[in-house]
Length: 125
Image: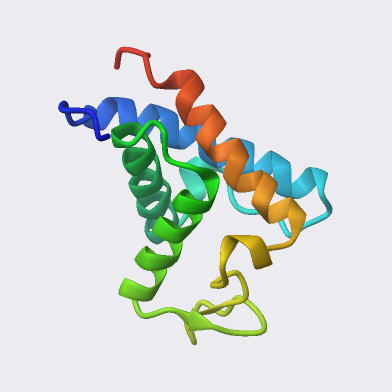
């Protein structure tokens, strides 16, 4: 069930920044290509992280698989399609697959995202 109160922009921003940096660290720890620090991240990346954080804040019992479905829906809405590799120009992404078909490192990343949001959900910003 969704919370009745929409989280503040400041709260979403603070948690999204934390989630982004955790994802950055997770990717590097697993030998994946890095992503830029929050202050240098492209607008689309910042917006996508904020959207994911807001959805989880408004739906605190959201599973990692449902969070991944939300991410996929947003990508598809924005014109992305499944592709062998991530290509910003062609808008293709290899992770536009069901949660259970993701590599373990990606499933764990979605769990990490939800866990960080849950841990920080009660901050006042």
